[in-house]
Length: 222
Image (cartoon, rainbow, N blue to C red):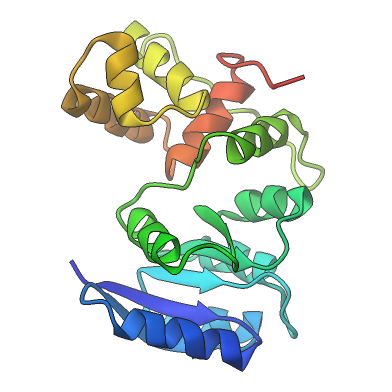
């Protein structure tokens, strides 16, 4: 599969570097670049990329607001935030806006390419350690902008095994780790996660983690 990518960053040098990086890959192709959040939104509507690599601090419209608009489109692209600023508040705001990944610009180039592929495949970036802590804290915070009822697994809809899988997803375990924990195959673990995504109307694993915390299956770190 060829992944169509839009780059949104107000620094031409950053865009140029990412453009060269993508040009050297066979499965990733850049279909546009934007220097503001508003341009990123317009370009996404026009060219319909698979993934938008989005900076946070941009003129005209910041990357978080642009992400909120893009992920709310009828056929939304997935968004990976790529920023110099790894402040917790930016992570929370990005996830609330619908981003499926959060990267910093000093990461290894190969890791950035891998992240784009992972997000394009429908997954999200939930790494152990810092990201797990950030998502745990995020899930425990009220959203001041909206107060919808939390999504809760219906007893008649989610099986006991799926609850176990959801709990382990909430703890940040990968499909392989879930398989080892429950003594099942990786393919079975992947199938359980896919069914949870469908049953809970979750966009990706980030939302499954949030649901696990909101429903009390996993307790936020103190």
